[in-house]
View 1 (cartoon, rainbow, N blue to C red):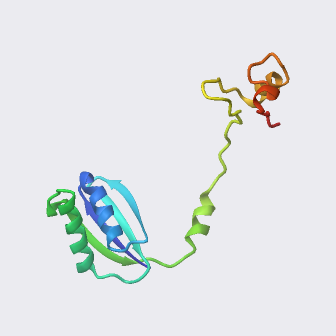
View 2: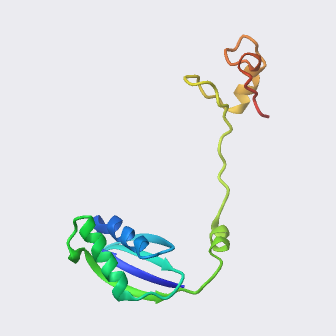
View 3: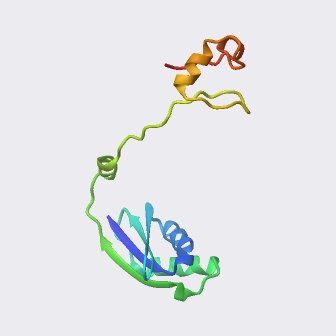
Length: 136
């Protein structure tokens, strides 16, 4: 797998990402740094730096940026690995509060409060009136 790292002015980052994708990148990654923005495009096959540079300069022209917005361009090889497995290594579940999904304009309540209200027929969102059930 090949990668192209383009260093550009921060304001030209979107144009460079567009150019890399138009040049056939499988995906891009952006990193802000002191000397500008580093945008890395990943390719499934080896790429020619001259062709990528041409595509990036075209993208800068389309976005009305001068060619000097592209500061540096580097081609490198990236070890092929299972990127999905790599992503899963650092993935951690996120705990989210359980809420009812009431009708528009109604107040959202946590499950513990909603459970006690849902059994009260006088409550405006009582299950028999709205067919809304509190999940426990």
